[in-house]
Image 1 (tube, rainbow, N blue to C red):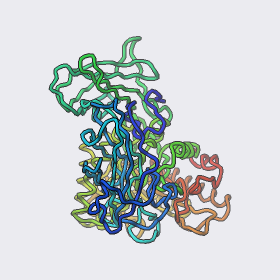
Image 2 (cartoon, rainbow, N blue to C red):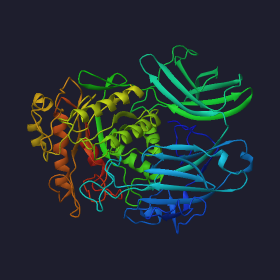
Image 3 (cartoon, rainbow, N blue to C red):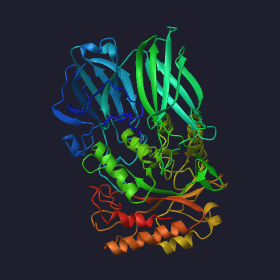
Image 4 (tube, helix red, strand yellow):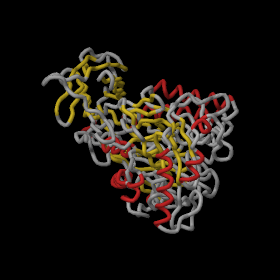
Length: 586
């Protein structure tokens, strides 16, 4: 476990600095249903008449408002005090997520705009603030019910329906300030190579690099022991370096790999100097791990791994998409591990970076999935592309993420089975993802109607284990489009065919238990005994199907009207966690 960089509630645990200010808490707030706030001067003379607790969206009880009705425009305002001793520093304003368009003003001056509900963004506000005084920070968020907007499980109608829930509007993840030297590290991309025991580092530096005396020191350690330390001169904003991680102080050094059983993490520090002056100091970490496929198997560090995943939509009753606390994140991860699962498929949501940090630390595998659009047009393509690139780049360094899932069940690409344009879109996203990140697996369309994909994933909510055994008895029928899933969906889109990819059942189960108010897949079960017997039959049937190399059960918790979780929405147990763990034994 890495501890040197850990700061409780730090919003971005993969890139840690000591000088920061958390801006979560009470803000002034207002609805702007007439969209008149800009015209009426709200950026300088705020006109909102409410308060809200950031980072919770106004739809949630945790925000202090709790109104589920949709409002297209909402505003936020608070004062920020920039200490006088920070004069000369660059003041960076960070937003982990604002749904969907955010516009920022500081002291009435327009700073910038960001579009995308699930990706983080930042602005340098140094030239807009007055050091040693109180400054006004104003945010306008615009959201819509547009189905061409990447929205995931957020409803686009007045009322929730099926598996679509109350929308999330505005700020829904942490807001914070950092104080850095004008010359500082903006990002470091870290790519481990298990086969050669090397680490590729791509440094991105912001600021004036005219000086010939700027150098960057990198320090790598494992469990407190120094592994590698080196310096290099900096003369450009983007720098690549490939380093050898063989340590020979006491003979050949044995590499420590990241796995679910042994989630070894290397601490890494980046220290930027100008002469003897320290300009920047960043703490991070990485894991030496490789994900690949061979002969129908998925390999972790060149060894087959059977994935026992749990679908996780990341909703809480009081705060919806926003984790109510870091303790709540840990509670979910610990419950998943206690149930015998070794990973999660994070469904229709890009999760809080603190969740991914604890997955890295505790060894929980993650499939990271993009929020879907529900229309296909040029605008949807543009929005999806832009936000997806940001997400893949921002979460690249997390070793727990082993699979990218840009599309699910043909949502937003409803005619992909036959429409060549939609097929081309999925191919373009597959290859775009691979161009940024060739180290992970990519699933083109989770569930069915695959185009180009590293895994063949299937969704099937067949009700009993016996039905499953009969249905999956002939692999050729499954993979060669002779068996239909959900309303005549087949494994591959027209023009594509199976070529030996690993097969994973990435959604199944979804059994509802003891709740007449909501819905699950198939019949509800009335007793703990019948619930566990049905789950046992399904799990045993899946594990007995030799060409299936992993599964993902739906799901960890109930979510609003969907009551098919292993736990209730408030995380109360339905059955003992040990009973679920027994189902996941090899």
